[in-house]
Amino acid sequence: MANSISFASQAVKTGESSLQIVAAGVESSEDAPFVSSDFHFLPGEYIYFQFQVSGYAIKTTEKSEARGISLTYEISPQDAKGVSLTPPVAGFIKEQLSAEDKNWTPKRRASFLLPSFVAAGEFHIHLAINDSIGNTSTERDLPFHIGGVVVAPSEALGIQDFQFMRKEDSEPLEVPAYRPGDTVYVRFNMTGFHLGTGNEYHLSYGLTVNRPNGKPYLNEQSAAELSNRSFYPVPFVPGDVSIATSRDTALGQYVLLLTVRDLAGSQTYQLKRAFTIE
Image 1 (tube, rainbow, N blue to C red):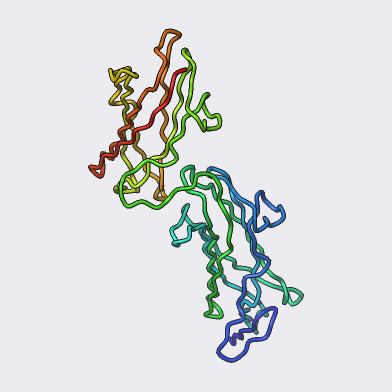
Image 2: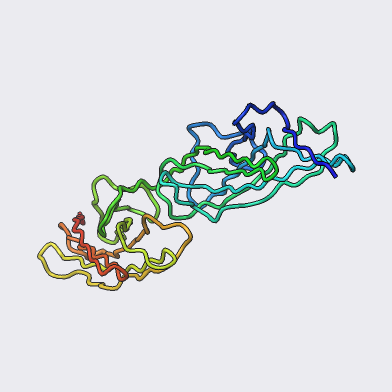
């Protein structure tokens, strides 16, 4: 039984593979138009991807005239350093073709749930394809952007994007001034912490607030303890606190001391900020 190998879609030059990734792009929903270069996904959203393949080898069995292709592929959304955001999606394309299918380009799709804690920046979909019949391979990176929290790289535990707010999840205050009886809302991001096995983090934070006369108003050393693990090494973990005041709270400047502890990395970081009751 004799077999022959030909290549679809285009001729093969000596020493050169014709295998190509074509019609590939990133989508905001399945079968939507490819996103524009200024489109930004948000953490926790789904990202969709599709591609086609041309230039694959076709194996023909002369006795049966069967025409087959055999491709494998792996798709992975990655950050700028090539670290995968999610587990990759792998698959295969094995088809029997008719004579009319010589220019057929198989299409495949994939979708990924982006991590909830991922910093804003430039990312890409990495696609690798292997043709076992033609003994060729090709790969390609398709860029996309994620918006949201901007995080400066840090080698040590720290606090970034500390904000006072008048209401929970409201816009940050340029001047942190409140009235007696208001609740003082604070949010911040913890960065530079140690990641253990399985990208596990273990953080805690507490706070003290001193009155205008220097005496304690609030002392809560264990406001929260956070631990989790994830596929992608999270670059930050958000935190928040709320400080209740009463109608008879004294006017003046209050000093908040926030203490963050990296329990896995044996690190401690403190940040001092002031707000006023007026």
